[in-house]
Each structure stands twice: as C-alpha cells, then as structure tokens.
Image (cartoon, rainbow, N blue to C red; front, side, top):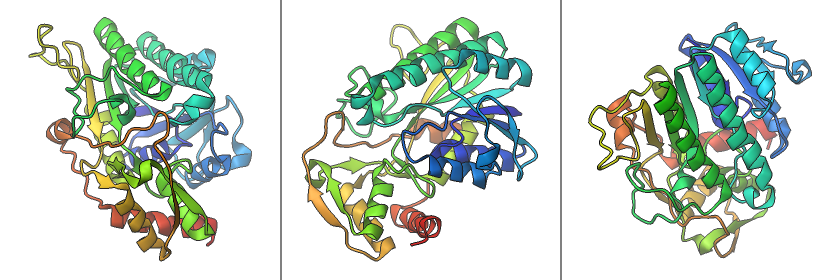
Length: 350
C-alpha cells in the first residue's frame, strides 16, 4: 500500500513509518516539526530515516537517502491546501494520522494550538479521505480521554465524557468526528488510545525521558502526587506492532451493534476504538527504580502534589486488540528502560 503517515518526525510516527517500510509498503511522511520540544530530536529521527536537515523545505516532498519507498514533507495538518494537494497527487491507499499537538500540561498554557492541530487538522484529514476515496484511516487517540473514570482497567466499553484536560477533549472529539465520517461516507476509521509510550527517541517532555536525563545530569525529578501514581508504560516496539496490524486490517461495521444498547467502541458503521498499551500497570516509584537500575544512578526526588489535568492511574484493557489483531505486548519496563538508557547514552554521548 501507499500510506500517508503524519507525525513522522515524532516519536511513534517515526517508528511506525520505519516498520511499514520494512514490511514493503510505500510511505509518505508529514510533520510540522514545531518547537513544542527540542527540534534537534525531531531532525535526529528524520536523519535516521534518511532525510538531512538541510534538505527539509516546508511544503516540498523530499526523498529519503536510505529508503527508496519513503518521502517526507514538512507541513501543518491545518494547512488545508497542502493536505488536499498531497491527497490529490499521491493517491493514498491508507492514512495513519499520528500528528497532533501533544501534552496534557501544555494544553493549559497554549490551548489554541490543540484546536488548530487536533481539531481543524483532523477535520482536514477526514475531508481529504472523503474527497479522495481513502477508506482506510487509523488515528491516534489517547488514554487521557478516560479523565475522571476510576474503574480499572480502562475499557473501550466505558463512557468517556469526563475529560480533565483540553488535550483529552480534542482526542475525544477526534473519535466523535471519525464516527460521523464512518457513518456518512463509509470510511473505515480506527482510533487507538495510546497509554504512556516510551523508548529510544522518546519525547523529552515525558517522564521516562525526564527521569533518564536527570539521572545523567544530577538533576532532581518532580514526583507528582507524592509518587502515588500508576501508569501503563508501554515500550515503543509493542506499540508499533499494534499500529501496523490495525493499518493492514482496517475495521468493519459491527453487525451485532444495537442502538438500544450501544457499544461505545464499535458501531453499525465501519468504526472501532482500541486501547493500545502494556495492560500491566506499573507503580511510578517502581518505574523510577527501573530507570535508576539501567543508569546505575540514584535520582534525587522532589515529591509534589498532583498537577491540574493529570490522572492518578492509567491501566489498559487491550482484550479487543488481542482478539482482533493478535496483539500481545511483551517488553517489561526493566528491559525497555535498559534499551532506552542505552540509546540516551549514545545519542547524548554521556
């Protein structure tokens, strides 16, 4: 297939693109390369995929030096003209939309960035799929949509109408928008609720990276909610395995779906929501110990109250993804952090 993957200078998008290429697909990548976090890390990912920083020109498709079937364009999802032109000229078989303005805490500071990218940008993707007959759309949602839910593990059959951040609200909106286009236009829309992804090339605004950086720089980390947090930390390889399976097996309508007892995770339209995580919640302090063991350093800690927009725990029920796609995450946090710390040492030369 020829597949558009958005967010390919980002963490998950980078690895999804490389995996699809390995499987024999043709990939066109798109990313805004915004400065939400260190652009050097984003260009580093692109360079690993064969795109030199000097070659990147906004709005222009460039060819990878490493992969004959990989091209990239720098651009914004909210640039409707660019998105339409890309769809009109490329003839995609599938789209995997992983680009978004990420981060829970940043949504308190710059809310408009989330509306521009996550709402307007996603609308442009849906409209382009509609008008250019692309029926296979997968997209990133987030475990953040569970918000005030406390029933564990989080299930896609649960109601998710109580978000506690604008970021979560935009991701819930994406799911609603996707259902509308699945119902009206028959686009096969599969949403993936990601749970705390980590690994080499990971986002520097997330805890695994921050903890690793602190270990090598002698910094003090902030441990929120006084360490009484749980996260479904999921290693990047396990996430990618699930994403590519969804791309290769687009969802279908649920023939047994009933409007009298509606299942939120499926529909009479070709629409499906999956949790994608490790399904093995980890205590925050245990995760910090895994970082310390991998780095060989004890990290100084400052214990803090929980932050606005944060949730105490995340824990994924991935039964549907296992049954439908054979998804079985297998990387324990000790091994995942060993590989992450090894990458960090190499990339930052520490």
